[in-house]
Length: 266
Image (tube, rainbow, N blue to C red; front, side, top):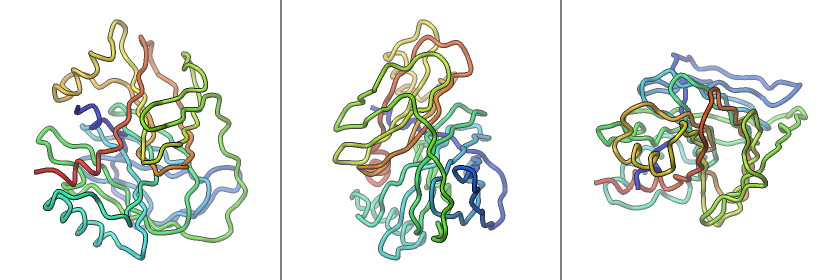
């Protein structure tokens, strides 16, 4: 089912190497812009509570999937391993771990996700394929990120009014989503990586209409969406949910196998 291709969007802007300093009064806010096919964002940010603000300035869907590189691995190692996995149709190596990030939003919209980052080497990736079937990462859409250690100012996480627990294989909501603005806490309590996409449905549309739109090549208007990209088990994140227009309903879906499917492409 190609519904798992849906993902979070980011913004595009040209960015020079930069280092971002933490805010003392709350989460460090990092803006990510996406375009075809690039991320615009800092190269270095401090560890601690971080809000990623994703703005999609492109013409296609984009998201910002954060991958942590363990064992001293580099972005060059990541690219080589991804190429080998695609060639040999094998899963990604264990030193790549999914660390979250904001999922796809409607073109021109903004998605926000908050999480706690540990020091280390990371890379932002867009796994979403274009209509030609080629994932954006294979078109060069990746951005290395160094998260530095140091004194982390105390910052309170955003207060959530709804919790979504991701399990193998279901969503468990603390209460139904209602119209208006919410802060959704996402907890992965499953044994494997999971993600959530919250897509708003137009009046009269159903889940089957959404599946048909996605499997039909995503032709026509994109449904408003937000969410959290695949993350490892025992991971917390917060996302705001606030549709900007009158809608008929909403659905949640998981697409956490996106990277493995990319590696297994023929």
